Length: 172
View (cartoon, one colour):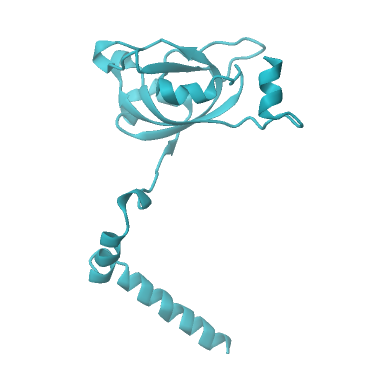
């Protein structure tokens, strides 16, 4: 009985693989019916921010993701003509330099992280030191620094126990 089940599973798997291979007419028919936005496969390279700064050309035109500690929003790196991002529409994100011993806080200004202002407005309550996940594309290595358009900024800080959004706002 086990043999029959394994054989049936193998046959079904083989049929699926053959029918969904790139050259198959059935696969093309399915692709034509599925909207492109549903087919996007995100492939971000997890990268250490220090490695990114030390080797910016290696990551040029690549999608990267960075785990970091947020420092603050800034205008650093905006309106520079060789990697132009207009300060009217964009703001920079500074993260803390990783690996700094003790209680010292050093912004990692060599890493130019740029986000659209309308997107950044969602994070106005973020505090310095909050852990964040940043996904973006390295669009330039001007001045031998990596310049990254942020696609997604995500706070990894759990909401404080028992504290909801209205309580947070009341504290401020």
